[in-house]
Each structure stands twice: as structure tokens, then as C-alpha cells.
Image 1 (cartoon, rainbow, N blue to C red):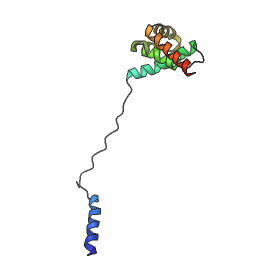
Image 2 (image 1 turned 180 degrees about the vertical axis):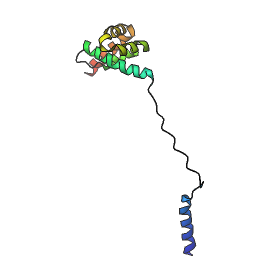
Image 3 (image 1 turned 180 degrees about the horizontal axis):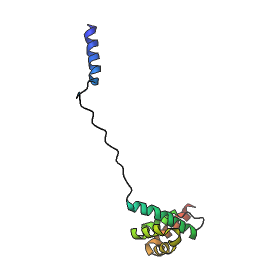
Image 4 (image 1 turned 120 degrees about the vertical axis):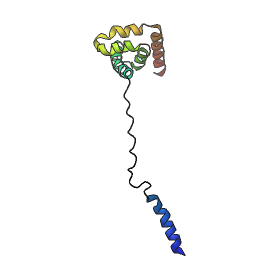
Length: 119
């Protein structure tokens, strides 16, 4: 009486090993999706480096990241592209122009107040 039970159990265990479609290759695995950053992301990244350097010149020793964020938020893509292309040498006037905008000045004032509150 045990033999039929053992054979049934063995048959069930091996049933998962049966090839469903003999002669057919398995479907290829999908290729991973490769995303390339948009040009705007590359421009912003390059401009961030230049603006950080420019802000650090004007505010030595300060954490300029929040101020740089304010400049980037209030600049157009064309301005950021120009800043990124000009590098550290020609970016001073462009950054100063963006900093002089009311929205940028307010953002920087808020970031400065927050920094004083934390310190």
C-alpha cells in the first residue's frame, strides 16, 4: 500500500521537471533599460560646479550649496548652458545677474536665515 503513495509523490515531485515545449528555446530575457540623462540634467550638473566655485569665491568658508540651489532654480536653461560653457573664468557676471533677481535674492536670504538658525 505504500508503493502507490510513494510513486504518486515521486510523480508529483518530478512533474515540475517536465519540459513544456520540447524543441523550443526559452524566451530571451528582456534587456535592461538603459537611460541616458537628458541634456538639461548634464547642463545643470556642469553649471552647478561652476556656480558653486563662484559662490565659494564670494563667500569663503560658507556652505554655498543652498545658495547655488537658489541660483539654479532662478536661471533659465540657456543661462545655465552659458555658465557651464564659460567655466569659472566668465561665469561671475552671469551668476551676479541671477543673484540680483528678486526671487533669487529672497531665496538666498531664506537660506542664510535657515543656516543661522541651525548654527
